[in-house]
Length: 266
Image (cartoon, rainbow, N blue to C red):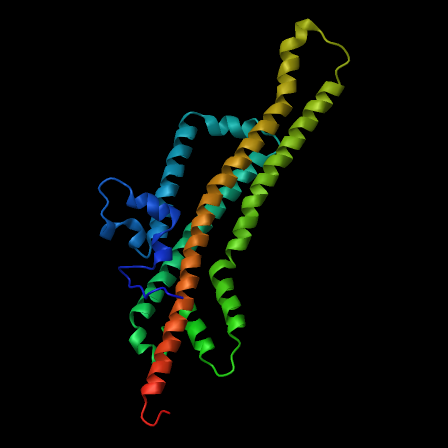
């Protein structure tokens, strides 16, 4: 791998070239050396900004009375369940972004101090990079197993969040099926059509249709918004894993160079 070592002020190319990072760099007045994505906690800060927009939108909906109408129009409770799942998953995403940012800082410090890597000084508590490098330094170790462990640490927790993201969409589709089922049952109970009762009839029929539409829209919206957050997490985790593997290769190269330069080396 031809990637060069990064520093806390200059993260790796994978870290810089994320989609959100490229958007931030194009904001008017943002200088490259002060770009948000160059901060180790840039992902968390972007999550805060994204969450702030969502909170403002939710507040405006509450002011307009949209939340009350949204919940009251769905007697099944599926819409409320989707909203609660989205809020909890988004909070978890912010916590995960902070953890990844902490690991990013320690990884940048490790990459900056490659000259002292031969000692493999482990920080307290040990980071993912420290644990991986120490494990790979053991004689007879199976590197592929440790790579899998590293991948589990960086990406494993995201799988449950992606599952929840898919459940939001499935709940929306379930609400659509329930809504159209209610509509079909109401149509089946009609024995005759009385023009004088058309208003009441339409009100009863649109109840099932409203459930179908509201749950579907809520599920799709939650799926899209949570998917954006999880995609950013995965890209950040990809950069951490890539730079950790690069750190291992650079450490092995430095170790081989020290061995060859040692007195008495053949």
